[in-house]
Image (cartoon, rainbow, N blue to C red):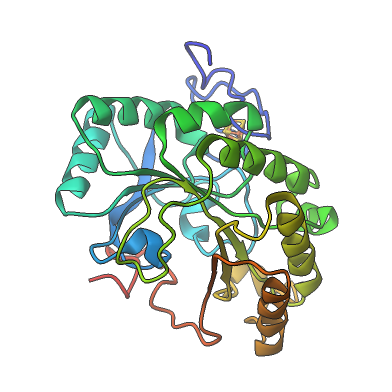
Length: 308
Ligand code: SF4
């Protein structure tokens, strides 16, 4: 990476090339000013990360994906919520979060602010911080940067959203998502291996490795079945996989059926059945009736009702 990775910015597959240092936002919606929307111990991640004391989440403003149904839409859309934070304040915030006793530091949608995060992680290691650092992402990562991410991060938790390029195009305006996400995932697994330990009870939180998330979408179970087939073929049955049922329609999704409704029980059941048929051994599933406790409202001081 050159000395001004924000200018021109090519930090993600969008490859905007805009001058973020000069104040121009890219597709991610963000200039080179670090913006953070929320942070705190979070009990709503998978048990492997939440453990007993929570995951230390830091939610960044903006996103390069821009899926119209994003549950974090209040912060991920252009000009979304968030406050500008200096490098010093970022460091203090991270140390304060670690002091709460969280099991890991969880950087949510970190790629478009990677230069800030990379510098912070190096500083935290110099401080003697030992807890795992977790890269929590959309899967839409630039493969060329995965080794840089891996030099700082212990855990990768990427989504694998779409195997269907037409669906990817419709949702996030890039039909290349399946190939880009698959290549990034291959590199993440090559760097860190599978999640270790994988403890679905959360009694032994994960230290390193990769877990993949997939959100089943209403009306698009075929996409999910293709995702599962692809992941099984590429990575085998031991790939740690979180199959999520928690889709909830956002305002932008309301006029776009079938995204205007929750997932049906039969749809989620079909997804779980296929995952089990394929023999995934390290599989996490959710209840069919998910509560709203971990659907965020970033207008609130505490966005997640389920957090203490
Ligand atoms: S990080 Fe933002 S500005 Fe940079 S290439 Fe991606 S979308 Fe464009």
